[in-house]
Image 1 (cartoon, helix red, strand yellow):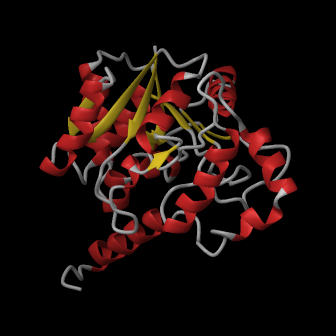
Image 2: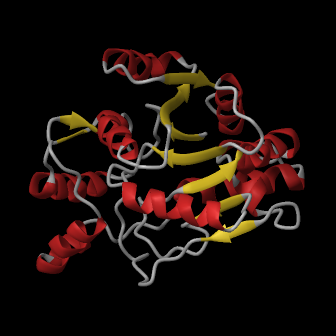
Length: 261
């Protein structure tokens, strides 16, 4: 089985409620789910949200749209993923695909390429973001349930629990890790949803390319930006992976014993 898990919550320090911000009349969460469902390899897609009251809205939305939703720990996202997979009855060699809800331009064809690379090379974990060559916002991680289980049992640092997969990436002797890279480096493009400028850019992309009958993909966005290069200037001042970098600072406090700052 290949299980797609979309990590989603309403709480965001930089852009609160972003997963319900609308593009072409539908919330971000709908688009991420819908695009992940277009994957030809993923068997089932589940929204994995928190058990906090603030995320009742996520659960109710999923219920209304007939989308399967799992609720778990807000901060220990690794546990949320593990418990969801356990509830689904995954075996150790079943495959988990991690996508985050701030990726409304996630590309189902790239998802399938990463899964295909994973399956053909007997990896425990593959990501297209270890050495970024794709636009920020197309990040796809693929790993076995066994690798997730080992992480759940062993991971201790805040960054390892909050971001699900750092324990795997930081312990290569324990896991066979693959980096899926694009033939052209497109890592300078920012297509994630984390700042108001990100919303402005993605909204223009949806207004121009969205159709209910078909899914636009990376090459369509690249052509749009090529013809309108000013679009790339809307949000290019922000750094990649700011949330993960913040978690690494929390790791340092634990490792130094300084928990009061």
